[in-house]
Amino acid sequence: MIRIEQLHKTYHAGQRDIVALHDINLDIAQGEIFGIIGRSGAGKSTLIRTLNVLERPDSGRVLIDGEDITVLGHDALLGLRQRIGMVFQHFNLLNAKTVAQNIDWPLKITGRYSRQERAARVDELLQLVGLEGHRDQYPSQLSGGQKQRVGIARALANTPRLLLCDEATSSLDPETTQSILRLLLEINRKLGLTIVLITHEMEVIRTLCDRVAVLDAGSVAEQGRVVDIFLRPQHAVTRALLAENHAYEAGDSFYERRPDGKLVRLTYAGEIAAQPILSQLTAATSALATIVQGTVARIKDTPYGQLLVEFSGGDVAVSQVLARLRESGIDHEVLA
Ligand SMILES: Nc1ncnc2c1ncn2[C@@H]1O[C@H](COP(=O)(O)OP(=O)(O)OP(=O)(O)O)[C@@H](O)[C@H]1O
Image (cartoon, rainbow, N blue to C red; front, side, top):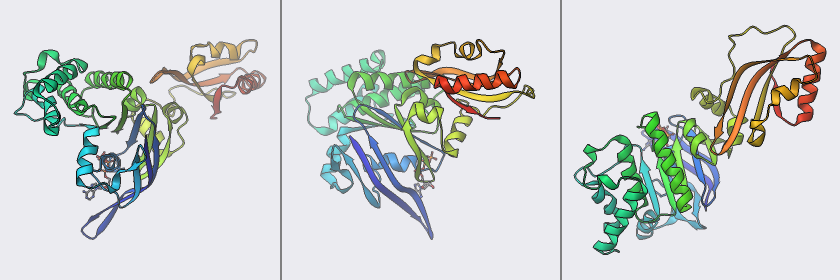
């Protein structure tokens, strides 16, 4: 649906040139939730803003359904922006208007619908985001999560095919964040809507996204399926982001290594996460398995586990376990 080709953007600030985007290439499929993560200044906002041409790149192309949107003129751009919804970190609601009026606003400015049609659409959207009882309230009377629900309803008013989320949950507490992420997931599934989001939180990527691109200093450090990036991060920036978010840790040691011990990281995803793999590995050997650290959780719909295990019990037993591991096909890394 979206193809980004060799995108470059440099800002000129006085004497300084700041390269915000450098040779970005990405493909985003219809109906997927695609996350863009990176540290502050990595270029996330600049990149997402090129997708509705709030920012024009210096070179490269952004194709949406085959059409290069970077060269669109003023009128075509207004049309494009009606087909692309955007949700903002600070909600950007009109404070003097009610919830219903905020949601109605993008419908009204198209001049395309009758008052009755708009009212019916607003009702539908209020129901979709769970705000039926709040239609006549003003933004100041709402919680952060409710404000973001209004922001989402407003972004969906003109039935866009693409929803852009700019740090949509960064101002919310963890519980409200989860409820907004669930709402976005429901909307993606119910409406088949493509969602592109930027975030600095790995937890958002883990819960919501199908694929992710990690940005570092304006370039794509790595990209791929969230399961792969989470479980086998290749780039130092990805590893650091994962560690910061406590979704993954390199393994600290409150335990004392045994002299014959081998420290092994086991990574498994999908069906195998429910198997008693440690028992299977050590069965019929005299090896001992000590769990040093472990995670069993989900990446979106995929159950996964990651265990740091020390195998000990003598060189022979440890070699037997390592041989079984190699035969098992379980993804593993012998660390020390
Ligand atoms: N209008 C501008 N003029 C000059 N430099 C800019 C401008 N906008 C962004 N930059 C610079 O471009 C780089 C990328 O900025 P961008 O806002 O895209 O990053 P970001 O990953 O979204 O960061 P954050 O998470 O802090 O919002 C940064 O070095 C930033 O300082």
